Image (cartoon, rainbow, N blue to C red; front, side, top):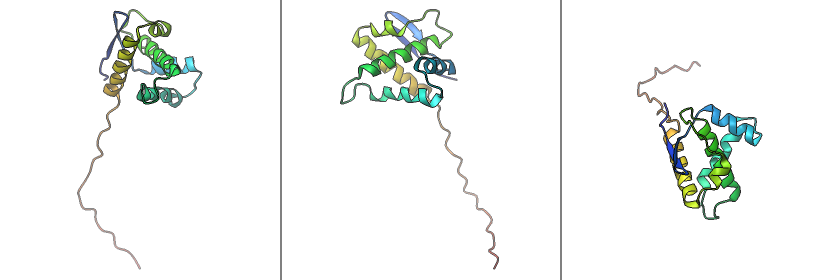
Length: 128
């Protein structure tokens, strides 16, 4: 079960989808054939606003990710296009990136710790 993440864009609130449909849409948009290729693009979220500044290409990718995640949630009656997201004031766009990144953290699969057993295993005799 995923945590519902809402994002406010252009005065409207949208719920972000985290299902397979998002990856399918982005794979088609970017011409990728594998989940891993699409997932690599999501890595740009970690580098936004770094020491080298924010790449304009990365801003375009983020707007496409947001569009797919909004259209990927069946709870949204309305959609917003990537081009409209890019026309938002810069502060609002940056806030959307923060909300998007925080949403990923909340929805990342949590690994269960491996079970550790302290039971003694029977010793086997070595044959000569």
